Length: 215
Image (cartoon, rainbow, N blue to C red):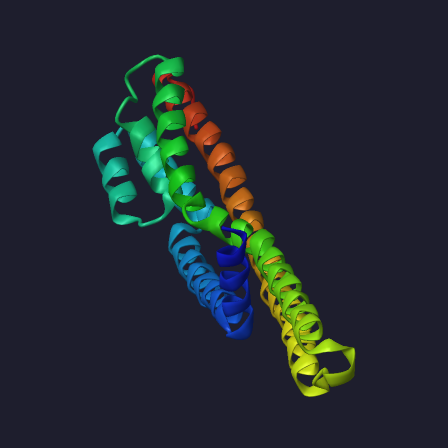
């Protein structure tokens, strides 16, 4: 059992298996980052212009037209506002509850795949470290089998080079992935804050209009 495990480790260390894994993580990280940036760009909208447009229809009691405005917008906030407008004749807690549920749904869509970036950022240095350990195992194995007098410096140098290269490759992938993940998270947090403030403003508009106050 031990012999077969050592044989597998040596086979892995002799090839570029670890580097292929790190390269795959790199490609996956770039694809997810680009996909999230495009999705977040579509989710964003000019909330000030959106709320000003809705204010006029809510003031006139034209909720149907206000809902149509939400449907015409592709932003995340418009979907949350629409859920509240559909319950405009309900109590405040019911309106807020509907918007909260819609908000949680939209947040889950915003965060989709973003966690994978965090996982890649954490595991690629570990995978690189594994390659380093395997490289040293190969180097010491060469020294043990050939003896110190007959050891091939070329073979030892290749093993050491592979060992250090995998660690470097893991860090090269991990560092920009951490930056990309934090950038995506910061944009999601900004959108969530915008959702909360806009939702609160729409609820206030609906309640003031229901009570007959000027808005």
